[in-house]
Length: 460
Image 1 (cartoon, rainbow, N blue to C red):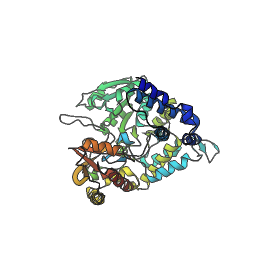
Image 2: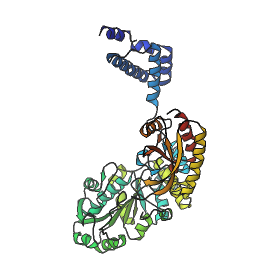
Image 3: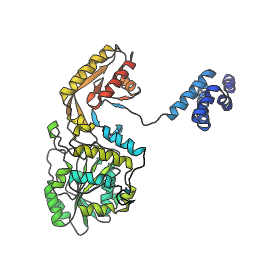
Image 4: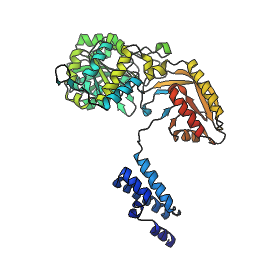
């Protein structure tokens, strides 16, 4: 006890540390208030270590620890990671990476003033949604508006078109997606009343028809984007549901979620509906995400019948849920890639369209270079599957070739942790006691970084 008390008294005071040349240099660079707070944190940690029986660090080490704490505190928490999982739309990793043209558009809009809400033709205040409206009209053939995500798009549509009234939806479509987004909860928040029809596995057109009443404001169809119901199932076709909606003079709203604008069937992915097909089937209004299969920034898009879109646009919630100039810049660049038929500009489309043979060629070259590093890790190729992810194409995958990494000294769990703690961090898969790297979701530029990471794991 006496020894610990003596050690605690020997710890330098805050002001004493602040006057040391190395710390004073940090103050000049980062500010006195910020550095002082880090000094107090380091000294508190040292006191706790002494109280638990540890020896106090040398005074020189205190300066090093303060400098480390100062630098660490100023590091951005949002960091680049290498996604080697093979999950293309990895929600935890930010979903769709933007195209180079979209990134440049964001940088250009972010560092300068723009005509976000200024009509250059008239010299008067304009509307910000025009920056996406024309492009979406050209792509989809109907007017559209943009909000901050698809959940917001559904919420806004329900609030604008069905507040106080009933919305009819199949029990088999009362979905929950990541982050506890549940259709019934969103409907309740919107002020609309949920009217469930059918059963979990079977809902017929007649179920909708019987439920329609004077209080009905919308029919809602929700794409089951992250799960499948198989076996003894039934659901009406979208065109039939649209005809019923038209006969009943009740709008049909479809929550498409993924927002696919190009056909995935040539790449082995079936049953992923296209936005254009839903509109052609007679759906009055569709909502979908911008950062999923569309391959753009996070946003939600509502498109459809002009009178409905305009009604939604006038709703007060639209202002609360609107997006900023950088989202419009990125979305505009993404949509122009579709209009000019340059799908390979979009990383998501490029990764989906990548063949197994192409990935195998890259993986062979990667392993050949990796083995030359002499890092002691075993690298070998194995067949595997990539998934699109992001709550889309459930139960379907893309064939790929994986790089399996094993170590004679570390378990797969330990190796995964080391990959994750590298700079840049690498997020991997672990299966059958092996770390697996899928180059489908690793760009050519990132391959060089990944090889550097392997080199840094020498002896692991």
